[in-house]
Image 1 (cartoon, protein in one colour):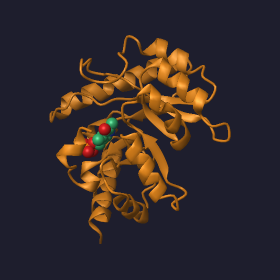
Image 2: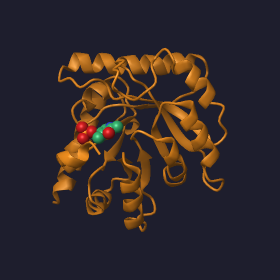
Image 3: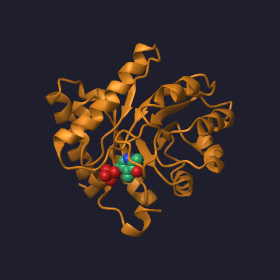
Length: 234
Ligand SMILES: *Cc1c(COP(=O)(O)O)cnc(C)c1O
Protein backbone atom coordinates (compact mmCIF):
# COMPACT_ATOMS: atom_id res chain seq x y z
CA UNK A 1 0.00 0.00 0.00
CA UNK A 2 1.13 3.55 -0.69
CA UNK A 3 2.10 5.53 2.41
CA UNK A 4 -0.62 8.10 1.83
CA UNK A 5 -3.19 5.29 1.49
CA UNK A 6 -2.06 3.97 4.81
CA UNK A 7 -2.30 7.36 6.48
CA UNK A 8 -5.73 8.04 4.98
CA UNK A 9 -6.96 4.70 6.21
CA UNK A 10 -5.69 5.52 9.72
CA UNK A 11 -7.23 8.98 9.79
CA UNK A 12 -10.53 7.63 8.50
CA UNK A 13 -10.50 4.97 11.21
CA UNK A 14 -9.88 7.65 13.85
CA UNK A 15 -12.82 9.66 12.53
CA UNK A 16 -14.99 6.58 12.60
CA UNK A 17 -13.99 5.72 16.13
CA UNK A 18 -14.40 9.26 17.47
CA UNK A 19 -17.82 9.61 15.87
CA UNK A 20 -19.01 6.27 17.17
CA UNK A 21 -17.71 7.07 20.66
CA UNK A 22 -19.72 10.29 20.55
CA UNK A 23 -22.86 8.46 19.45
CA UNK A 24 -22.69 10.06 16.03
CA UNK A 25 -23.01 8.59 12.56
CA UNK A 26 -19.46 8.63 11.09
CA UNK A 27 -20.96 9.66 7.75
CA UNK A 28 -21.76 13.05 9.27
CA UNK A 29 -18.05 13.88 9.60
CA UNK A 30 -16.34 14.73 6.34
CA UNK A 31 -12.57 14.64 5.96
CA UNK A 32 -10.86 17.51 4.17
CA UNK A 33 -7.31 16.56 3.20
CA UNK A 34 -5.25 19.70 3.79
CA UNK A 35 -2.71 19.63 0.99
CA UNK A 36 -0.90 22.96 1.34
CA UNK A 37 2.80 22.68 0.36
CA UNK A 38 2.20 19.16 -1.03
CA UNK A 39 2.96 18.40 -4.66
CA UNK A 40 0.11 17.60 -7.05
CA UNK A 41 1.24 13.97 -7.09
CA UNK A 42 0.48 13.62 -3.38
CA UNK A 43 -3.08 14.81 -4.03
CA UNK A 44 -3.37 12.43 -6.98
CA UNK A 45 -2.35 9.57 -4.69
CA UNK A 46 -4.96 10.57 -2.12
CA UNK A 47 -7.53 10.88 -4.91
CA UNK A 48 -6.71 7.37 -6.16
CA UNK A 49 -7.42 6.11 -2.64
CA UNK A 50 -10.82 7.77 -2.80
CA UNK A 51 -10.32 11.16 -1.15
CA UNK A 52 -12.25 13.94 -2.90
CA UNK A 53 -12.23 17.03 -0.64
CA UNK A 54 -8.95 18.96 -0.49
CA UNK A 55 -8.12 22.08 1.52
CA UNK A 56 -5.63 24.66 0.31
CA UNK A 57 -4.30 27.79 2.04
CA UNK A 58 -2.26 29.57 -0.63
CA UNK A 59 -4.08 30.73 -3.73
CA UNK A 60 -1.36 30.55 -6.38
CA UNK A 61 -0.16 27.17 -5.20
CA UNK A 62 -3.73 25.86 -5.27
CA UNK A 63 -4.42 27.20 -8.76
CA UNK A 64 -1.25 25.55 -10.05
CA UNK A 65 -2.33 22.21 -8.63
CA UNK A 66 -5.85 22.61 -10.02
CA UNK A 67 -4.34 22.95 -13.50
CA UNK A 68 -2.16 19.89 -12.99
CA UNK A 69 -5.09 17.85 -11.66
CA UNK A 70 -7.69 19.15 -14.12
CA UNK A 71 -8.51 15.59 -15.25
CA UNK A 72 -9.82 14.71 -11.78
CA UNK A 73 -13.20 16.33 -12.38
CA UNK A 74 -14.88 15.54 -9.08
CA UNK A 75 -12.25 16.92 -6.71
CA UNK A 76 -13.91 19.34 -4.29
CA UNK A 77 -11.68 22.34 -3.53
CA UNK A 78 -11.91 24.10 -0.17
CA UNK A 79 -10.11 27.38 0.45
CA UNK A 80 -9.07 27.53 4.12
CA UNK A 81 -6.36 30.22 4.28
CA UNK A 82 -6.38 33.96 5.00
CA UNK A 83 -7.95 35.98 2.16
CA UNK A 84 -6.67 39.27 0.80
CA UNK A 85 -9.30 41.31 -0.96
CA UNK A 86 -7.35 41.42 -4.23
CA UNK A 87 -7.48 37.59 -4.37
CA UNK A 88 -11.22 37.10 -4.10
CA UNK A 89 -11.97 36.78 -7.82
CA UNK A 90 -9.98 33.59 -8.47
CA UNK A 91 -11.15 32.15 -5.15
CA UNK A 92 -14.77 32.77 -6.14
CA UNK A 93 -14.18 31.08 -9.50
CA UNK A 94 -12.06 28.08 -8.53
CA UNK A 95 -13.35 26.76 -5.21
CA UNK A 96 -16.60 25.15 -4.01
CA UNK A 97 -16.10 26.13 -0.39
CA UNK A 98 -14.40 28.93 1.52
CA UNK A 99 -13.91 28.32 5.26
CA UNK A 100 -11.99 31.45 6.16
CA UNK A 101 -14.36 34.37 5.65
CA UNK A 102 -14.10 36.80 8.56
CA UNK A 103 -14.98 40.19 7.06
CA UNK A 104 -18.04 41.47 5.23
CA UNK A 105 -15.96 43.11 2.51
CA UNK A 106 -14.45 39.74 1.55
CA UNK A 107 -17.87 38.09 1.54
CA UNK A 108 -19.34 40.85 -0.63
CA UNK A 109 -16.56 40.49 -3.16
CA UNK A 110 -16.89 36.70 -3.25
CA UNK A 111 -20.61 37.04 -3.85
CA UNK A 112 -20.18 39.65 -6.61
CA UNK A 113 -17.41 37.65 -8.27
CA UNK A 114 -18.90 34.16 -8.10
CA UNK A 115 -19.35 33.22 -11.78
CA UNK A 116 -23.05 33.07 -12.75
CA UNK A 117 -22.78 29.58 -14.25
CA UNK A 118 -21.62 28.09 -10.93
CA UNK A 119 -23.84 27.30 -7.94
CA UNK A 120 -23.59 29.65 -4.95
CA UNK A 121 -20.27 29.47 -3.11
CA UNK A 122 -20.43 27.58 0.21
CA UNK A 123 -19.15 29.70 3.07
CA UNK A 124 -18.06 29.13 6.65
CA UNK A 125 -17.35 32.15 8.81
CA UNK A 126 -14.06 31.86 10.66
CA UNK A 127 -14.36 32.65 14.37
CA UNK A 128 -11.46 33.65 16.62
CA UNK A 129 -12.76 31.41 19.34
CA UNK A 130 -10.03 32.07 21.92
CA UNK A 131 -9.78 35.82 21.17
CA UNK A 132 -6.13 35.54 20.21
CA UNK A 133 -4.81 38.86 19.00
CA UNK A 134 -2.65 37.28 16.31
CA UNK A 135 -5.34 35.10 14.78
CA UNK A 136 -7.75 35.61 11.93
CA UNK A 137 -11.44 35.28 12.58
CA UNK A 138 -14.32 37.40 13.77
CA UNK A 139 -14.90 37.66 17.51
CA UNK A 140 -17.88 35.91 19.05
CA UNK A 141 -19.26 39.34 19.93
CA UNK A 142 -19.20 40.50 16.32
CA UNK A 143 -20.31 37.19 14.82
CA UNK A 144 -24.11 37.76 14.78
CA UNK A 145 -23.87 41.02 12.84
CA UNK A 146 -21.47 39.53 10.30
CA UNK A 147 -23.64 36.45 9.83
CA UNK A 148 -26.76 38.56 9.36
CA UNK A 149 -25.05 40.54 6.60
CA UNK A 150 -23.46 37.56 4.85
CA UNK A 151 -26.72 35.62 4.85
CA UNK A 152 -28.19 38.33 2.58
CA UNK A 153 -25.58 37.96 -0.15
CA UNK A 154 -27.12 36.36 -3.23
CA UNK A 155 -24.25 34.29 -4.60
CA UNK A 156 -23.11 32.81 -1.29
CA UNK A 157 -24.60 29.95 0.67
CA UNK A 158 -23.75 30.43 4.32
CA UNK A 159 -23.20 26.95 5.76
CA UNK A 160 -21.59 27.33 9.16
CA UNK A 161 -18.60 28.24 11.28
CA UNK A 162 -14.90 27.44 11.28
CA UNK A 163 -12.26 27.86 13.98
CA UNK A 164 -8.62 27.11 14.73
CA UNK A 165 -8.44 27.16 18.55
CA UNK A 166 -5.28 27.96 20.48
CA UNK A 167 -2.97 24.95 20.23
CA UNK A 168 -3.05 22.70 23.28
CA UNK A 169 -2.50 19.00 23.94
CA UNK A 170 -5.03 19.03 26.74
CA UNK A 171 -8.17 17.23 25.51
CA UNK A 172 -10.43 19.04 27.99
CA UNK A 173 -9.19 22.42 26.76
CA UNK A 174 -9.55 21.29 23.16
CA UNK A 175 -13.14 20.26 23.77
CA UNK A 176 -13.99 23.47 25.62
CA UNK A 177 -12.95 25.58 22.62
CA UNK A 178 -14.86 23.42 20.14
CA UNK A 179 -17.91 23.43 22.40
CA UNK A 180 -17.87 27.23 22.28
CA UNK A 181 -18.03 27.16 18.50
CA UNK A 182 -20.84 24.62 18.59
CA UNK A 183 -22.83 26.81 20.99
CA UNK A 184 -22.30 29.81 18.71
CA UNK A 185 -23.72 27.80 15.81
CA UNK A 186 -26.72 26.71 17.86
CA UNK A 187 -27.48 30.21 18.99
CA UNK A 188 -27.40 31.43 15.37
CA UNK A 189 -29.68 28.57 14.40
CA UNK A 190 -32.16 29.64 17.07
CA UNK A 191 -32.47 32.77 14.95
CA UNK A 192 -33.33 30.62 11.95
CA UNK A 193 -30.15 30.51 9.88
CA UNK A 194 -30.24 26.75 9.35
CA UNK A 195 -26.45 26.36 9.45
CA UNK A 196 -25.32 22.76 9.07
CA UNK A 197 -21.51 22.88 9.16
CA UNK A 198 -18.90 23.04 11.88
CA UNK A 199 -15.41 23.07 10.37
CA UNK A 200 -13.12 22.26 13.27
CA UNK A 201 -10.41 19.78 14.20
CA UNK A 202 -6.98 19.11 12.70
CA UNK A 203 -4.39 16.35 13.08
CA UNK A 204 -3.81 17.00 16.77
CA UNK A 205 -7.36 17.57 17.95
CA UNK A 206 -9.81 15.95 15.54
CA UNK A 207 -11.17 13.55 18.17
CA UNK A 208 -12.09 16.42 20.49
CA UNK A 209 -13.67 18.30 17.59
CA UNK A 210 -15.76 15.30 16.54
CA UNK A 211 -16.89 14.81 20.13
CA UNK A 212 -18.15 18.41 20.04
CA UNK A 213 -19.99 18.14 16.74
CA UNK A 214 -17.50 18.77 13.92
CA UNK A 215 -18.95 18.07 10.47
CA UNK A 216 -15.65 18.82 8.69
CA UNK A 217 -12.22 17.96 10.03
CA UNK A 218 -9.27 19.51 8.20
CA UNK A 219 -6.29 17.17 8.38
CA UNK A 220 -2.89 17.73 6.79
CA UNK A 221 0.09 16.37 8.71
CA UNK A 222 -1.45 13.04 9.63
CA UNK A 223 -2.21 12.34 5.97
CA UNK A 224 0.75 13.80 4.08
CA UNK A 225 3.43 13.96 6.78
CA UNK A 226 5.14 17.01 8.27
CA UNK A 227 5.29 20.07 6.05
CA UNK A 228 8.63 21.65 5.20
CA UNK A 229 9.17 24.49 7.69
CA UNK A 230 10.13 27.13 5.15
CA UNK A 231 6.86 27.05 3.23
CA UNK A 232 4.63 26.28 6.20
CA UNK A 233 4.49 29.98 7.07
CA UNK A 234 4.26 31.18 3.47
C1 LIG B 1 -2.66 23.58 7.90
C2 LIG B 1 -4.08 23.68 8.31
C3 LIG B 1 -4.79 22.55 8.75
C4 LIG B 1 -4.16 21.17 8.91
O1 LIG B 1 -3.33 21.13 10.02
P1 LIG B 1 -2.57 19.78 10.44
O2 LIG B 1 -2.15 20.04 11.83
O3 LIG B 1 -1.43 19.63 9.47
O4 LIG B 1 -3.53 18.66 10.33
C5 LIG B 1 -6.13 22.69 9.06
N1 LIG B 1 -6.76 23.88 8.94
C6 LIG B 1 -6.11 24.98 8.53
C7 LIG B 1 -6.85 26.27 8.42
C8 LIG B 1 -4.76 24.92 8.22
O5 LIG B 1 -4.12 26.03 7.82
